[in-house]
Length: 403
Ligand code: ADP
Ligand code: MG
Image 1: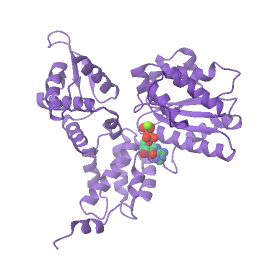
Image 2: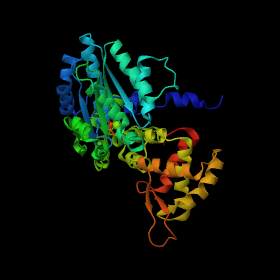
Image 3: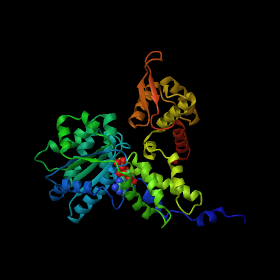
Image 4: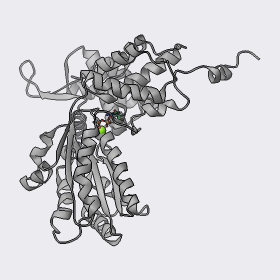
């Protein structure tokens, strides 16, 4: 038989340990979190009272910080800690972590929490307030305390308003003498979202505000070194490769970008049959990965939003301009919709979707000034070269793979 490519592939050496890549997955919660011990301790101090008397205390915490500063990882890590302490004491305390970028409505958030307790709850047929009451009933009946993290809640509040926050905070505040059933950790990128809350809710959160600062290059090196030990074979990742990644990612202070670069550089090393992850592979990785256009963002978009975004990128390339008008976008959108066999949305829906893409931080819009007839909305891509976005999106939409 001629070359057995499968055998060749199976014997090929990888810079990764067997199953090592999972330590570089963004969902992976690290076993140790350098430079976040103080924050974990602070959470422990806040929640000590909940462990001591779960039915008399409820805590509200607000965590903010840029992307990749460890907000999600810190809270999940803490969630595991609190469940562990509760288990040791046979307390009925649960931790639930919900990302509001994928659970986009109050209804979906509440349904997800409820299904944690009762898998048989039908997906439809209730109002949010009915779901809320069902949740209270379950917590009451089972004498439970739920520590709920609403991650990226600014996204939900911006599109849907603050009702969910009100409902969940008042769930306990209104019932002073009744047992406390719910503690709330909210996570946001920046605190401007607080402006929409009423003053009493605001002050509830302001008691416990934690800011996670951007990581410095040397902190990023510590984080990367730990991941390298888990994910890569010994001596496959040179020191200057780590320093280079840390330097690149320290602009944004973003550990996720750093870890993504490390992973992608490893993939380049493998596809080049290299023994080590040389700095050149980091440079290649950097040209491919964009810190703002992340897989989880693409995952969170609907098919028609992705088609719309691709249309924006294509038309910007086509027009060689900084901005396009909605009219220009819609021309391209017709073509791209056809290419992807999607029924194009009507004008008003296109408009709504543009606003949603802007909420995600991918595009920006402004009202036209001089040089345009009448007032029209202009759409631009401040964060990423249009060609890079087109490449990432096309691959994602054709294969489901992110780069
Ligand atoms: P955020 O939610 O603030 O955007 P994440 O918690 O998702 O950031 O962190 C981004 C990535 O970096 C995750 O893979 C996370 O495990 C990792 N990470 C962040 N901070 C640390 C740390 N101090 N130690 C180890 N890994 C970290
Ligand atoms: Mg996060």
